[in-house]
Image: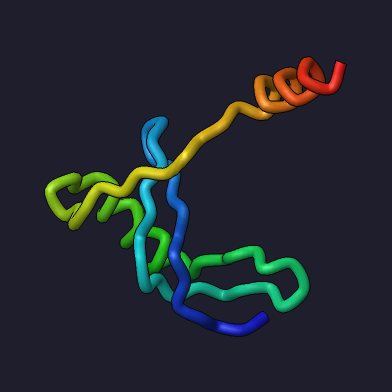
Length: 76
């Protein structure tokens, strides 16, 4: 494990929020992120106060089952 600053993916009330520059412990083998209790508490506070969100980003999203079905249909 080593401590790094990461882009944290935080789930709160059914939404996913990304928070930049978060101190985390990162596993050297699997890259899993672990947060100390005070850091996690701060992530919760940031997620609760939506006015602190600096920007909205968008990204492509596919549904796994639909993507597999479409590819299989084309191959048939």
